[in-house]
Length: 558
Image 1 (tube, rainbow, N blue to C red):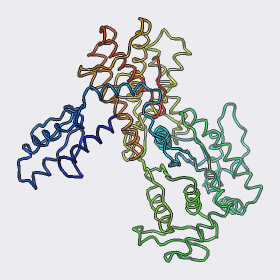
Image 2: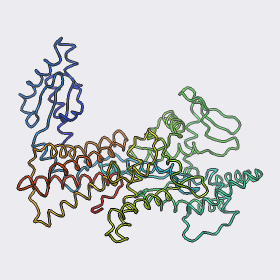
Image 3: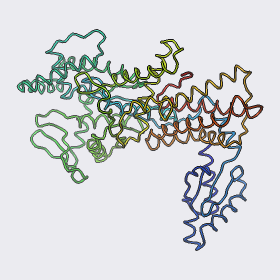
Image 4: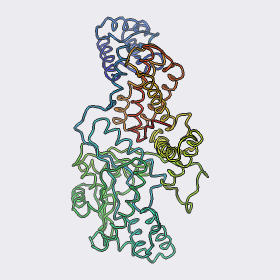
């Protein structure tokens, strides 16, 4: 409804002004939309902008298409307020089980995210990639796109050679309850320590890399077994965060199926390609890059960049839109990839770059003090959430409190990460993330639980008859914000900015709580009670749908 009314408003303004750009903006607290087009017309008509605004209001109001929209001028500004029919239809639509779902698209999307090296557990630095990527996957699906979430699995690089060397030589036993990624990282850390103390073993890593590139069966099995053990642990972590990838794609695929060599053959034809012995590189200085883009080493072995190019060509053959989520430290690599694909006439991926997330100093210690794993972050958040839930709901069984705490902790981590625009760095703040009283995931989850509780009490008291008549300002503010959910979702997938949805749902919880405080629901009578309960149900469903896109469980009781 919101988009329809935006388009209707734009159409009316274009008709009476003859302009394509009618300068529509959000109307703020006083209107649903506003236009500053009077300023543009004042330059050509040599009139006062306020006079022009008044004339335009009269012209628009006379149009039959303007029915249901209150048009007024405030000085040079033209304000548009959507009427009762818009509000009623918006609330009615918001009660649909699939509210917010956009029309089915035929444009397949592949979103690659997380893709951390399988040499140990995911850590705090990885999970912003995970949360941004998974939220985009969910948003695109809700927006009607067929989506495939992919994890690009490094199964042959130097770090994996170090892991494989460790597995081959250290012979550690798996500890009871030890996850695969925890088991592998012990080998990786110790192998690195040994290599630092004994540099003479470094050539063994190089030899293993040459062997896997040549397809040596024993080396391939060692690498793949090591990677698979670690990947299983990573998948457990992802699952605990409500994240599932549709496909894990091995890097070696593109080496052995010939596609990497096909890409290099195409690049060989570019005038800016150079060789030094067996080394091959592109001179991208003409494209604004000051360094070489190496595609083959001096010993003839391939590099990650070449395999990555082949991977992206493979993705292009399977989708209409390819999106990568990468850390800010990959900006150069991402730009070189995009540029090279353009040079050989291929569509480059869209890249969402994100700055990093950190923890307040001293907020949590680590095993060995090297990094904090995602598992440790979730465990600590769950512990703190359990303490808060126990204080708030001591009458619940431990099992019930644990279930709530688990949902709250994952929601707290995901929301605190996604609420910040990707291009800004962020610090995960324990107190803020778990605050039930302010703008956090628990705060939003609690708004949903409150709506469920109101409706449950109403049903126990005989139910209600749906009614869509609204006039109270708190009713109208809530209803009109509910109406914007599909529009915000569409904006997220167009702009690749998932924090917009986080902001939207936080504001929705704010408006619902204000409505709950100042517009009594269960104590109201007659049609007012019915209309407010209908609005509560619409808000409950909108919160449920939006939280689902954010990967956060919408709890019915807290």
